[in-house]
Length: 433
Image (cartoon, rainbow, N blue to C red; front, side):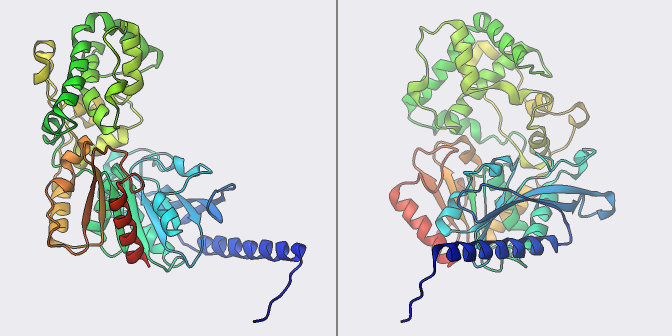
């Protein structure tokens, strides 16, 4: 075997040249894509050789392409042309991917490129003017399909789609609509709701989350807020006023929704019973505590989540509230259709719900056996409408569901029990080899 000695200055020059050539290759290839409107190099990217922000031009409506175009933000994190590629099917903003420390956990496992697709009508991907008619799941999936199809000319290895929460829903829908776009799909904590108020979440919180003692402790804390409403309400109102929150209904009614939401938020985010304060806490401190763990901002009429609210009312569905445990304290509160009344613009109050997306996805998952790994948390209220509740995988060779014991909406591969984590990782590596 021959060996060669290269002086350090020469070695550094060679490495710099190779990186320059690589960057030039990637920039040139990206520039050659017809619908790429803008490319910006992003510096300081831990774990990646190169990183770019791309604006990709799409039709507002794929069924009516003459309506117009909008630009979707894509963040591309490059490892190598010979590596597999992960498309992160966001449900919201892609801003987090700008962080120097950002790296998807599956990208770490597979040493893969990452393509983060910001969801239309969020962040830098909002059409102007903002016409809600074109905010549909099918249009958003076509956005991803166009991006992936274009980038497959650059990254010719295997592709994996993944997303979290609403992004996990997007991963699931993307596989149902474009089953051959990617080799593997990993939806995290993805609900599949059948209506605006699905009906499965309330009994899940009442009977499934935690132990009976745990559930009682959470309910008792909510009841304290009911009993002390007249004393705590002024502090709550001031906190909302200081934050400039604006609501469609009186603040007293928002206070009641604030209480109802607490149990969902508690279990969704995996809070601890030890975090619940003692009875000795004064009224102002009670309000401050609740605001920290259960901010009512998303009940606003102009919430930053308005795009999500519109989709929830149109086709994604949502959850309802059960006022029965609060008896006389909320006997006049009517929570039916609260999402439309509280969280939608006036012009969309009567928008009908279309369950065809739900039906299509259920049909696909029952009849097909795609290479998919679902990740859920056992006590996450969103799991109540997750496929983990009804999909029989016993006769499927590929599709697998993993539920983290005691897990929440924060359930990930890395915090699974050792045996589950090892099984998931081995399966991913086998599929993506």
